[in-house]
Image 1: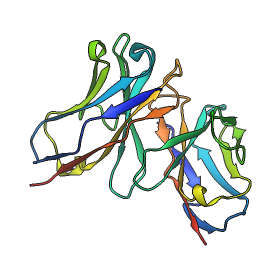
Image 2: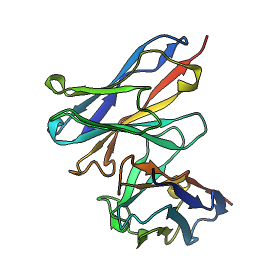
Image 3: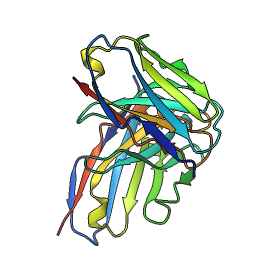
Image 4: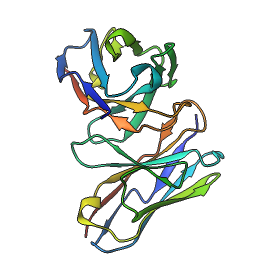
Length: 120
Length: 107
């Protein structure tokens, strides 16, 4: 069974750094694209970016380019989303999601979400 | 980036109703469209991809159609478990983009 398990909720202060994780199991981690989706409180889904762990090919939405870093460690089947300096506006639920599609198309599998709260 | 719009943004319906949600792309995306369902407090779930292909395990009362710029998601006979928010997403080009969502609640 394909599973994506995300790290737990985080409470941070503005200006702090953060790295959240998404561990894949039940499939070949290097064969699926892994993406990140933001959902701000009470709002819709926003596509942030995606990585192919096999070769670390990474694509970002212009809205998030330079604001976050997506990475993956295929040795431990884990993808990451990180911030170097959080803002209050980063408060949101973040989902990782997997795409079997060779073109990083749609997301077949989803993690349970990581709630990030940024508050002074 | 391709902009996705959905209509209506929300509506109320009754169990047993046939409901249709529309998604429009700001430019042609062929059939590179997916639909997701999200229930409160849960991760989204893939329903349909390639505009009309039902994801494995999704009930056949869900169907999708369209190509180019205009797409629809139809639920033929609404069940209690279908009250949720539905999102379309294009994968014709980067960045992939989602529609704003359509919330279906109980009348």
